[in-house]
Image (cartoon, rainbow, N blue to C red):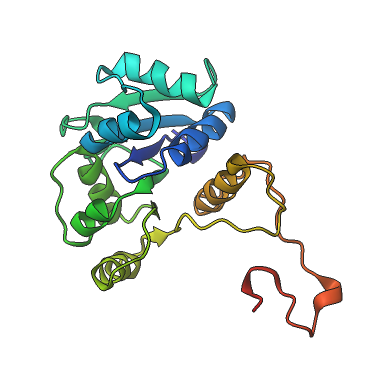
Length: 219
């Protein structure tokens, strides 16, 4: 199997901001990617809390649930895994993938991964990416970060994990919440060299040279 056809694992935790996961699936499926998805146990509670919607447990029904909310009924390939099925394909390093993205990522998941703990399929799959030297991208959605959070994130960064906080930019002139979310999702997918989201990227400010006008890094 060529790398272009390898699946990408998407992990969804109980951090607030499930719209990040929905928009990720929307663009990846529309671009015909193959997705292996696992949602943590707490994700079910967050769907109920944030959207007053019950997420199905049964894999086939859950696939239709995600496709419905992403508004991508048939494109791409999506397989959903129960959070407790630690015998699933994504729990093994012999199952080849493009890597894994956890979006949104809770601080509980960050802490467990930083300490080599894996109590469910999501954590096991992420741990596999680390041990196999594959790409693991975390999109933490928390504020403020405590010193414990920062130390755990630093530990993961030191192992090669990419940390992409859910922090949008404004230079692309967002007009909606979706525009802000899509910017974060696009930057996370950049870590896999996946470019499937039509966002306006920073082109530089020629007039601002020498006057502090340097986009994201300006003061």
